[in-house]
Image (cartoon, rainbow, N blue to C red; front, side, top):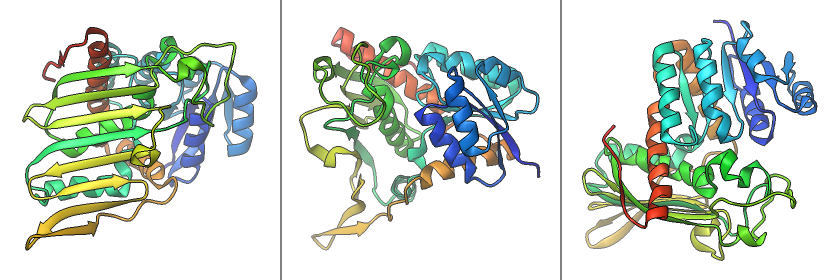
Length: 354
């Protein structure tokens, strides 16, 4: 079968990660890259052996030789580029979050449904071995009835690109919640499926970033820029069976909680699961004694991204719906919208069935 010819929109940090990942994926051809910076596009093309470069993403999308596009640009551009790509008959791998809000996500879904093309959202955490194992254990009933999930991603000093698009509400729609919080939201909802979120009570803060503190190593700060997004977010999410997901995320916070990294705790009436970067365990009880089992060995660096890339290529060829399809992205967006709205109002925000 012929290679899938890929066009990459965005040659910034995330675009380079995708180029590097797909270079190692069988059946992928790195055919084109577009970036508003010609220098970045040319440099990426030279490093990864890409055939064509564009400074206008519209021209890449119109290129008849491109089968699929990988979109890695600021969130404010997601809907416009994803819709244009789908309407042009291209398959789309779209970086998270899906859009700036649920209304934009609906436009993308409508374009996907009318086009029949593959739409996949870039939630690579689903392919981490412990999270995949957690889903399997729950389906097998080893945890019994799951009733509480605690998920999040904490950083003590990790604000990316202070003063750039990363810290602009107009360009990104939010801060840590839409950047790293959405990954753990997606993982938590994934292990709880098919249960659905019906209400969100949450709050956001920008306490550290507003002081120009908590700067991370991702991106280059622009001290002439601004910071108007969240560097800490927290939410209680009610599911339709009474299960609660407690979500928290921080780019910057004076804490050493949860190893200052991603984590997932799943609690059932017969057992539980703990997942951190340092390891994962299945916890239960036998004959009145605690039992701890290794859940899964951690994946190697970048393995989950490669598995995501290969899954995207497989779905293009087979026509199957991706594991992280547009509906999962839309669901995540509904929860994020409710989190921000709840922080504004101080009240729980109900989520309509979907």
